[in-house]
Image (cartoon, rainbow, N blue to C red; front, top):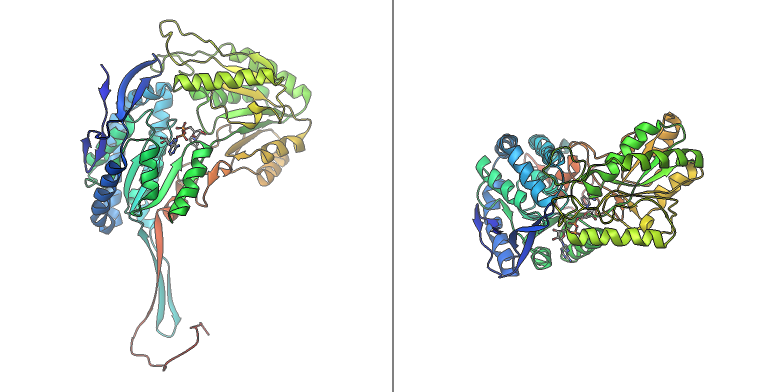
Length: 499
Ligand code: NAD
């Protein structure tokens, strides 16, 4: 039976009234399992009005009380993690272990946000002048919105909502229409944890909903994660409407393999980071850059051998390395890239097209694909493929490898595998990429640092989670006061200075 999903507004589930819906698939079977309403502009405006009202009391509550709600929320997520992970896998297609990780990385940011009272403290200067004290305070923005992608339906909404709520904002989440059930469940859990109705809302929708959030003056900030063209669109539109925005986009993450690296460790890292979650991670490694032909030949042989043993199957099955892609469109898009790679002259070492999982013939599966001799002018090198496709792009020496990662238009993550500390140190200092791993293939920073790519992988000047998130979701007010008030200096016609 096809379930009909809702929005979550004002503390309750609300059916869609626009008459527009999108299908939600089970990618493992290829069947439609639910349909999600796509909100009209009027529906979105009603959510914003509700949120604006609810924010007043929430923003005025002391920060410790807000933090306690987040503490309870963490316990509730832990209570329900198995059911949440199953729900997530069934709509996204990632394995159940990976789904638990998706939720856990989100929870870690909520745990960090429990320390918000410390991060929301202002600064104070006493006796800056005669009887003058100066202090600053961080205040919530009001209503803020998060627009999130399909590939981390728990983690990214929690990365956005945690700091926004802890800072006293009301939050409107517009999750991906492809896997909206976990975000709706998160809304229920926030309510159960004690968040007042209307402070955390989920509005499902597409461009119409997003554009309404962008255009409405009552929404003060937009946090976006998704593909680069949409990230750029949202960043520029938000700016036009006078809003704050942080918009994170696509990626092409390189892994530099130095000749002294342990190639078995490298192969393990590349197989996991390249094919895990069917390559549908913004921090997936999609380009291996072995330095020197000897390293490249040995690495290509190891990868080709290992790729042949990968187990692909339904998301909820045991002993599966990765599950289906999110949609049939995604399978077709990635298959098109594989054909382009062949046409442009790359060497195909493994072809994942046409992969059939017995008993799940209509599922959205692709086997692992591996290319060698990929050059920097090829489409499969330049563009984000976002599927289980790993390419080997050989570099003659370290400087060439460094330049490849630095010159690529995306700058999300990068890794170097080496036993040479000098090379690693030089690489971390010089590479033009936002997040760097040294012998770590997926360098997603922990919750109390910040996450953000450079170049076309990120628009805006503040990153996600960590202290940056509290700067993004608050505005600073600075007060200059004089006590006793009766000091008389006569009228002054010059700008006050601290002389
Ligand atoms: P997407 O850009 O298609 O969708 C992201 C969000 O934008 C969704 O909520 C969607 O409904 C909305 N949207 C889509 N088209 C829109 C339009 N024309 N106007 C307004 N809103 C629109 O991305 P996706 O396919 O859901 O996610 C995969 C992409 O996200 C990949 O490119 C991946 O690299 C990227 N990603 C980046 C990061 C990061 O931190 N840099 C993290 C995860 C995913």
